[in-house]
Image (tube, rainbow, N blue to C red; front, side):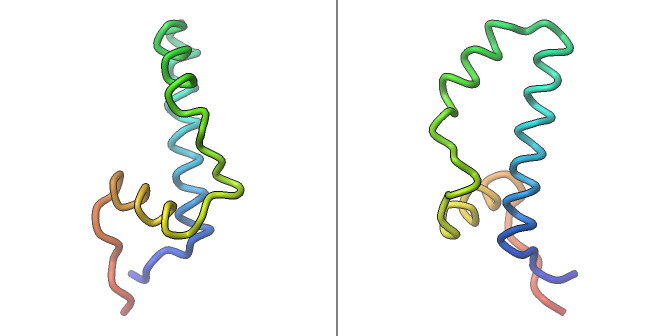
Length: 68
């Protein structure tokens, strides 16, 4: 498995955010949703730097696989 590209990492991080938010909305967890958005509104995935994307990605998924 090859290392994901920055764009693939960015897309996966955004997908995770969407899934988390969807779950909160579906289950009417409004206070949790408010707190979540309040805490994470600084994230600007479209413009965030590569180093920050890599750090966030590794925090969620661990080490990136080596290229084969």
